[in-house]
Length: 122
Ligand code: SF4
Ligand code: SF4
Ligand code: SF4
Image 1 (tube, rainbow, N blue to C red):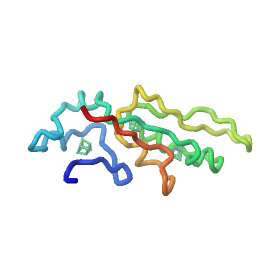
Image 2: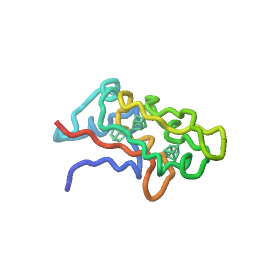
Image 3: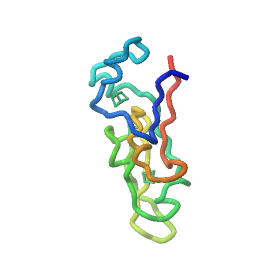
Image 4: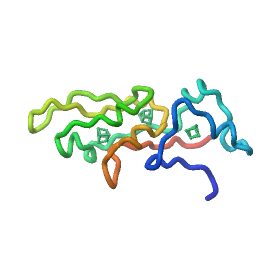
């Protein structure tokens, strides 16, 4: 209640932006430079294969990977029952900063096939 929260269905954290940190009057969101923010991990993306259209519909996608600013999501070859040349997401957690770009871009409904699992606070 009355605390900031990230809603990655509505949007995501822009890689180059630090506006909320610089306008927050109470220090609840600590000010960081853009370069420091880029190294700050808010959470880690989790991939749910069963929800992904590549697995469920044997069709191309890759929107999550295209929207990832750190290349933490890559599309890797996926052998499938219909023998199409498909690629499926693979997450490298160590590169993920939890910006939510992948979750916001993922088109699956009602459940996303990739979502950010937030890190615990200090
Ligand atoms: S740093 Fe991210 S969450 Fe904060 S205002 Fe910018 S885009 Fe929004
Ligand atoms: S949350 Fe998604 S888009 Fe953002 S860095 Fe992690 S894998 Fe990439
Ligand atoms: S955006 Fe969603 S549906 Fe598309 S490849 Fe990524 S996880 Fe799968």
